[in-house]
Length: 245
View (cartoon, rainbow, N blue to C red):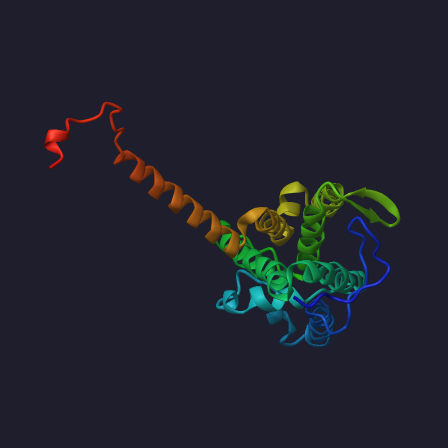
């Protein structure tokens, strides 16, 4: 596995800056390009890039396109920096394939789950953007990977679990500060909620590879238990030699 180039990281899970050739950098660039494209065309076809569960047929492509759209300058800039920086660190640890499955895969699945929930509720929550969803997933996953190890947040040393908690806290604050109340806030941040839950499951063994390993382990244990039922204890008494021939 080719490590991602970074500097200024230090020990204890410190973040560095990955190279521009990394897959994380390409995802960050995709967020910038997708956001600019949306802003230039939002009065025309740009709205088709957002996740709009009530739009007929939108479920087919929007869970993919919304992942690369943000509408605010801070959302675009900080989202791209988080994806590039934290995504690059995870890419160096896991490799690009697994990092993309986490960052993009969980964001897309969160989009599909949001579409299903909003369809079942019959609620129109408008168009969702997914750049922050992807950034939040990477933020929390990074903290969970560090775990009890030490990292830092703006120069403040803290554990990886606390770092993940801060990322989840941003989502909670967004829900609590929604002008329509908590329920409206939950619906408005549904992709982030699903994304964080998916990230938690992915890091804790819920990846396709981890699930396959768990399945194989369960199958092996079941086979061993079935075989053990057919085993019988042989008596320690020596049998009569007359019946051996």
